[in-house]
Image (tube, rainbow, N blue to C red; front, top):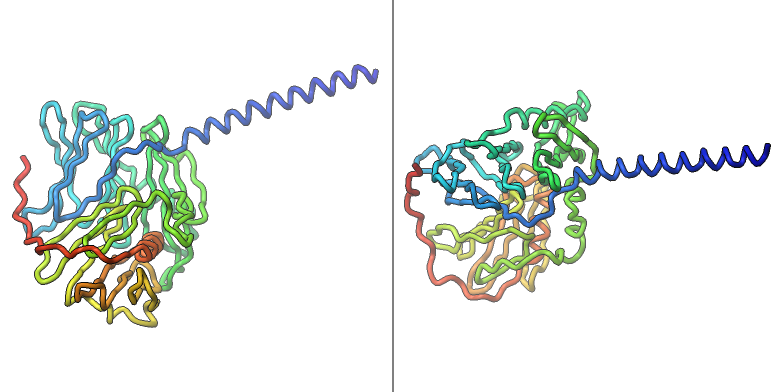
Length: 371
């Protein structure tokens, strides 16, 4: 009898082990399906002042953004079939944005940052003869986000610091929402609230949603809080000074009148600088509405300001003497907590010593009409 019971127990144990193994494999498959596509496809930052274009990885399609030709201050957006040269107008942006293609060239992602405290996500499918926007995606995301928020609360802003297509499946996207919470009819800096959503683009079904500690952690940017910048950051040289910034950040010289003006852009952030004799000393940004710190950066005395209520105000650094008898102001406006943390980290990497530009860039000529 004991022998029979032992054999029965062993048989049950093996069945349980087999069941657990199958269950683990299924879970692993689900987790893998929602991992981000880690390919190094290029991402472009959009603005109102210049033209940008981005070809799909298979070079069959091209996304185009063209600065305004009128006082309406809108950058028109197009998707072009490279083979036929036909263009489709897919709207415009009024402030700034970000765009990138899926690795399989089937879909285009567009982050439209149309307001300082709000962002809209748009995705276009190009598997047919003409580009087709996946309608209803943004409202679906908002509904899912607010389903996790108590009735008595509201958001200070809604921003998506991370969006990606799923690995090997561009019909699925992974979205991280950054939406700090406050009580309705109350003010303050807000309580951190970040949500990670996985969405099936074919059905607009929310496949998975889970809270994350914060948006920076969701992006894998823990190193931003360390004393040194991440090893992946690269140098952007503006001449008399330089910064270190995350991958895909770019430097643009802008039109100036009596000073050297430019910007560093990336991750949906624009940090503008003014290098010259009349740079803004950030005197209006003062306590108690702002955190004001005086410190040494790159061997030069600096004033660093950041609003106590992120999303409303200037996050900037001012150097009264930045060399060449000039001052320097570098700042971003209405940054989210994640963006503000990133900007403050970038400020710490400022270094001086290069030659100033030989001339100031004149205002750009009117952009040509796109047919």
